[in-house]
Structure formats: structure tokens, C-alpha cells
Amino acid sequence: MQSTPVLESGGARALLKVKSVAATLGVSAATVYKLCETGVLRHVRVSDHSIRVTEAELADFLARRTSQTKMSAP
Image 1 (cartoon, rainbow, N blue to C red):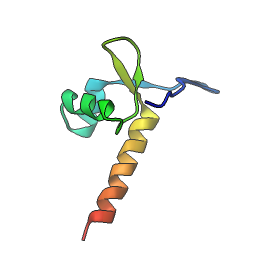
Image 2: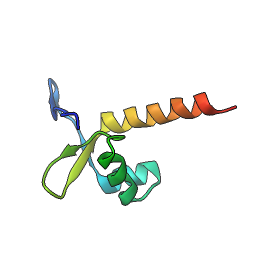
Image 3: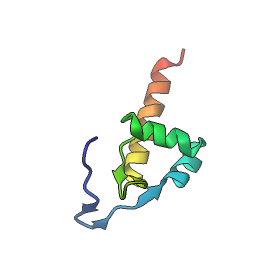
């Protein structure tokens, strides 16, 4: 997993809970955990049992998925 700094020069980036990411993507929390576990969705581990996803990473994930869909469309 790539380490992502949580602080930038303008303050802290928003960290989203798994439930919020799942709702945005329209999938289950288990799917979000699997995406994180497999490295498809970068995340920050805040404790042994909690992970968070930055807003920027979620936007990047959606952009990657959107471009892949466009390339594979007939």
C-alpha cells in the first residue's frame, strides 16, 4: 500500500468513512473493503479496524473507472 500524507499545505484533507464511500459508489461496505484490500482503492488506516479514503482518492478512483468504461464501450 502506498503511504498517503493526510496533511497538505492548506490543511487536512477530508477523510471519508467506508460507509460514505460505499454510498457514493452504490456498493456495499464489504466491496469497499475488498477494493482497499486489493489495492484498487488507496486508503489510510487510522486504527487496526478502521480505514478512511480521501476525497481526492475517491475522485481519482471514479475518474479511472470512468475512463476504463469509455475505452471498453463499443
